[in-house]
Image (tube, rainbow, N blue to C red; front, side, top):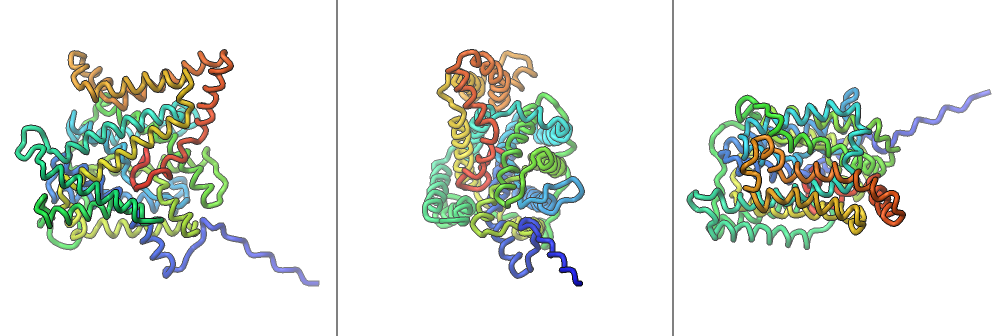
Length: 474
């Protein structure tokens, strides 16, 4: 009597190991789609902080290497670090906005300290994940994302105009070059299809640089220093971090809000690859890796780095769900980040080109905030009141920058940040107004509608973006 051989264990699609001839082009495709976000973010940071081309190139090297390392960790997983899903890691666009605002108000060393504190806070709250994430339903997240987008548009505009009182401030040539960059980006968004559409910002920056060189509206000046073919990230580029909890408050609040976004993205990614979602197990692994890589990022001069699911479009298009494809993309990013000639070339892009591209990216962030609010029954009296008051608190420092001028320093730091003021207002008022609305059947139903949106609305925000790097966490 013979016994049948046991059936071979079937490997899940997410754990499939592909041959190199298939893995290499698929990984390169992921890199092409995601590289626009770190490149544009670094240019924005370099221009806003007044970094020279050489220091910008060094920062770009650090960001690409860390994004690659984070992507590898999330895709492959080491012990309890990394979720083992096809995720990629990118610099957070919203986090960059807060980092730059902190650097402007308190100096880059304090901004670096804020990144370190925010990463440490994210690690500290992970054991209490279930309780913390309830503070940031889609209504609160929508307010925060909208305010971040509005604040960042102001930063992008300053890249175009330059600093007030300096030579060439608001020069017509700079405004025209930014407009040309925006026009090229929009044209590419209209013409490109599929995953190529996600490269519109990157190619738009290239087209804007070409316009600058051919028309004389700007100059392409890559740094010539640093010789050799290897680019090594610079440790503590702004000096030793300075820790100021009040100055770090915007990034501290933001680090907590990312838990809601990470939850949605983890569920979305799990469903896409056909793996059963388990937020209680997976979200702390994703967030812990974000915190670890962000901590390193702070030491190398970057803002918070966040895991993103914007590459999910490629997974759906190709049907290849293997996490080793994104692991290969992470390895490629590390290699690209260490190639000095490429970093120097990218660091020479004119500031108005970067500013024009950033207006597209951060305008979309603001629209995504509006979209998130639209899914929370904003017409319900309770929700509309919370949204109105939260946006008022958040926009006051933008439209009237001197409104808190006579207040103590700590109050100016908290109330003068539109994101912090608006988000905290929403966090405090949202549960209060929902409780008040519950006895009234009509309003209670509306509040329940908002509550239903709380259970996963944030999971769809990143995929809604038309261009890379525009998710609330991205």
